[in-house]
Image 1 (cartoon, rainbow, N blue to C red):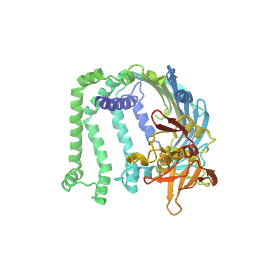
Image 2 (image 1 turned 60 degrees about the vertical axis):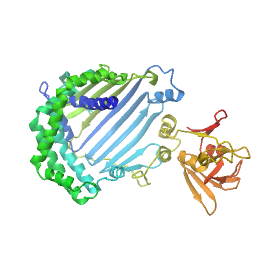
Image 3 (image 1 turned 90 degrees about the vertical axis):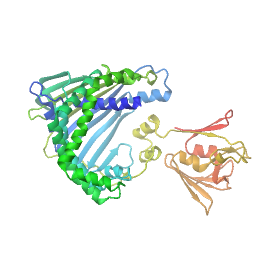
Length: 531
C-alpha cells in the first residue's frame, strides 16, 4: 500500500516539477506563464525539433548477451522531427526520423486528419491508419458516442486556456530562475529574444508541490471561476448523454434525481465542488510536513529516493520573442538509475524545438494512400501479427524483432508418460507415441505462437496460418503427408485425434513455425523457443 501511495505521489510531483517551470510571477519583466498560454492558443504554425535519449552505462558484467545488445542499440536514440506543419489543430503533419545508435536512421511520416492518424514508416508495406475515436470506443462497453466524443474534444480545446491560466497563475517560481536578453536563430532567422533559464532538482519537488497546493487553496476566486467555466462547458453535454442513454449507467432513479438537482443549479454545483476540494486541500496541507516526513523516511526504494535527490536535474531554456511567443525551447533531464543489475547508471533526455509562421497560412502534408493502407482501427493486433505489416529486410522490422524481441516466445510443457495416459491435462501435454515421436496438440501450440488454426471436419484437415513465418500448413488426420505453402512434406508420424485434440509431431510443427526445441529428460519436459 505504501509503495502504491508513494508511486502516485512521485508521479504527481514530477508533473508539478513541469508546472513549476512556468512560474506564477513575472521575473525581470518576463511573464513566462503568459507566453505559455499564448503558445497553447496558436492555431497554425511550422516547427521542428528533436528528442534524444542517452543511456549512461554502469557495470554490465551481469547482463545477458541480449540485454547488452539492447543497451547497445538504445545507447543513443534520437527522434528527429524535421518538419511539423500545423494547418490547424485538426490537421497536422510530421516528417521525421528515428535514429538508433547501432542500426541507423528510420524515416517516417505522420498525418493527423481529425481523429484519423496515418503513419508511413520506412519498411512498412503500406501506410498504417489508426482512428483514435475507434480505439476509445472499443476500449469500454460504456464508451461515449462518436458525436459526444467530438463535442467533448471541442469543449476540451475551448477550456484549455482557462485551465492553463489557473494552473500557471498558482504555480510557484522555482529557486533557480533567471532571465537574459539573447539573439538566437529560428528557422535561419536571427531574432532578439528573452531567455528564461530554469533549473529544478529532485530534492526541490516536495517544497514546490506544497507551495502549489497552498496557492490553489488561497485562490478562491480563481477556483470558482474555473469551476464555473467547467460547468458551462460540460454540464449541457452530460445532461444530453444522460437523456440519450438513461439505461446505460445502471444507476437507481434516486441518484440521477440527486445529480440533476446539482446539474440544474450552477451556483449549488460550483459551491459543492469548491468546498469539497478546499476541505481536501486544507486537511492535506495541515498535515503536510508530518505526512511528508513519515512518508519519505519510510521509503525503502532506493530508486524513489534517487528521483527525489539532487541527482535528478531538469534544465530548461525558453526563448520568448517580442510578441510574447515561445519561439525556441531547449531542455535536459537527467534521471539516476540505482538498480546495479540493470547495467545502467543514469538516463539523459535532451529536447529541442523551434517554431515559426505562427498563426499564418500553413498546409499540412499528406501521405499517399493510393496503393492501399493497413487499417488498425478496432483490430486486436498482437506483437506477432503486427510484424506482418513490415518487410523482413527493413531496419524497423529488425529493431522490433531482433532487438526489442517483441515476437519472442518460450513455451514449457510437461511430457505425458505414455499415449494411454488419461489425465485431464493430456489434451494439452505432449507425449511420445509408439513410433517414439513426440506429439503435441497442434491448436494449443500454434495459437500460443500467434498462428491461426482452422479445422475442416469434412476433410479431417487442420490448417495453420502463421503470418510471422509466412507459412500455411495443412495437416490431415492419419496421413503422413503434410502441405507447407503448397509443397508436400513427409511427417515422422501421422496426426491423431486424442481427448478431442489433434496431435502432430512436435518437432515438425515447432520448426515449421520458426522455433527451437529442447528436451529435458530429467524433468520429462520440453521447451519450445522462438526468437
